[in-house]
Length: 320
Image (cartoon, rainbow, N blue to C red; front, side):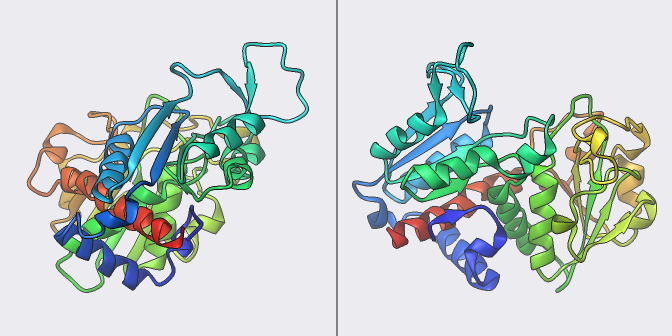
């Protein structure tokens, strides 16, 4: 596996899931694979779970790890071609990327959407430059449009906690005070479509995700109807994806607080489990009583980030 961006990159999903549980049972089983190998983690944006879980996974596999915060100590990087670099950006990504590739065997990239130019974001301009110019295997640690390590961990968690063979899984939009990317819901939708679940997406009208991620999911604008009988509720805010109106891309076009997941919302479910990728804004996305309830599985979900990343890095090491 030379790159990891989408669920298809893993091949048969059942085999990847079996591998995940094998690694969870023995996290150091494949430590020999990473001996004298170096992972470079590039962060254009803040991180807690991704940073910690990815570094831990790499260490479990015997790797050395270099972490670069682009906005804290490195030269400011220009990402666009054809510009006159007379501003505050001293180095172009086209020189920086191959230099980074000289110092490592594998690269993880975290670069969020700018939320101003949909075409630029959805072309994955930054990530694709790393894939093209680094000369090394590259995996996504959340990009402009996807967060596959999170979605893989989400699926592992659902598999662990499901009570029926084919659970009903609901992705619900919730309000937020800031404009957030669509990466997490995009990937979650993509992975749920690939899994054997009854998948429903619910959000206010106008917040439709890109069809390539929605896939065969059922879209329900009535949140209560969507929640009925659900086994898992995955709450997440996203800014307007600009699908129905490009001018709305990246904007907050709804702050409807009735979408906040509270005890009443969860009462509509089949004793459903609550999920969120974290960090979460309490009182906006979810109420205290829900996230602190016995049905909240946000911590085990976060813990599984180490496992999902271990599978990805292992497979990349095996391909070196």
